[in-house]
Image (cartoon, rainbow over all chains, first blue to last red; front, side, top):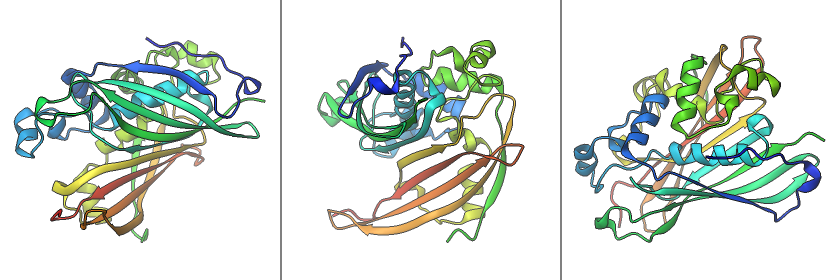
Length: 150
Length: 148
């Protein structure tokens, strides 16, 4: 569960960290629900055999699923989605069934009433044993601009 | 580049907005309840910030390739980046018009020898009044045929 924060412009300073938010652990059913809702029906996210034939040890999340969690976190940090003016993500590694997604943000600048935030989402979990992954890895990095009322 | 363009309609349906919001773990009632959305100044339930990725229902890969012709080898393609620039968020009940084109297409040498090609699709969404709502940039990376 999340809680929408009430935040005003004068309470924000560069360098300020926004409260960590944790989503998941993601299950295969979450990949299916996202596929059905988003139209991303690439079988690599749902079909074990298909995924293995491409060389992956199992299915993995479509990047836009943790990206959706990260957008959720940004929206909750700044009082809802209505102030969002830009949201950008770059995918750095795949995330896997049973991974949690840990979202963090830090204010980098304030220009007028536009707050710029750098974003990071880490995957946390054992991952497929075949891959011998670090337990935590940065899965997405990003940036958002939020225009707050004066 | 950018001389070819495709257009499509993206209906923002209430049930679809709610399903999408649930799929990304949203629990803010502005994505589910019209009354709450109205209290926040929206005419109806709001679509989550990444909702327009559902454009793939209207422009699946085959149509995109046929009409814009990036000629990508999808066995080697990854989703590299995604960006949205908002004037406002879409709301349930409206139909957006999307105009999609290839905004950038370049190749750069990778660290381990093979080159990588970056293709960015730009989709500009306008509302029924013709006003811009948001622009989405969808960047695919085609990795090298032979890596090291």
